[in-house]
Length: 470
Image (cartoon, rainbow, N blue to C red; front, side):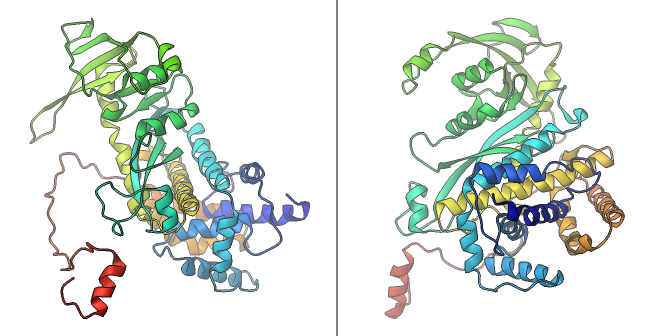
């Protein structure tokens, strides 16, 4: 990094921090620090010349692009032009080529490091009152995203196996580790949608080095795997999941209470596992199986079996495990926030590397919004999960024009603006929607357009020949 860039870089980082309330004496104001951005730039080996699209400016424009309802590069460059004019600077070219080239120049490692560091810094600073029984709980699950149907994307990411050639879109499988206490994303893994070794279990093994002894992993039924539970247990990480592919017999094992016992699962045979690694695993795993009754007014009572390696019934009661398993639904809501609210379900970039950069920028934007939610929750003595994510995005978008020019004002005015923003965000709480159910029916009728069942070029040739039916 050149010394002549230091002053300009520091000024740009300060502006980026102020956009997401990383200024002044607010709580969590050091989640996105200047040192963090510099560390990511050095680790990624980024060197740049004095130009308009420096790494921090490119990151800021990219963040604005994913947060805006209009995801186009043209709109992103237009916002940069408006910002430069408001600060008395010469406007840049409205053409999008320079901005797109700047995104290509920045390594993917820079985007991933900043995104993960922000998420982990927020999780490290959470209020102890937000933890579950004094423990840090992390949720893991997988989801998919679609990308443009280009040759480069198809080379790295496949379509669904039953898709005909020329139809559909490439799909990437993502696995994410998310903090239950504050909702921040700590890491994301990428895999193709189908193929050997592309499952969610492989994604988890790719990322579980970030866990510390004493942490708890909360997963779905897919995580009820002997091998994963043993390897996590050897790291001092406990797992909580739902019983799958096994039958619980509460007449056996060490009885802890009604519908609560400890049993020993023998090591199963794995045909595809590494022989030396598999041989080193223990012959048995001590597992606690707990029967939990889910009672919902107006519905039939359901019974589920929760499986965990938390064996102490006095420290972790049966009711604690039931409540924790129900909290797993938060990861589905978090995926909805980043895919629907931030519109990450359908990506726009036409190459695999740029697609991954787009995902990491969405993750960074998501983590920064979660930081603002944590600030509002800390100020008003609430839990971050009780504050609406979409309400925060809407409020931040409304305040952005004022925040963008608040650099002209003194620090006292900025702090007053921040406090008022946090007060508005704290009002938008997630409603208590117990016993809520809706019919899966649409009131508005869809447009009467047929599906594209042949490659587009084939259909266009038929249309050029005057074919009425495609």
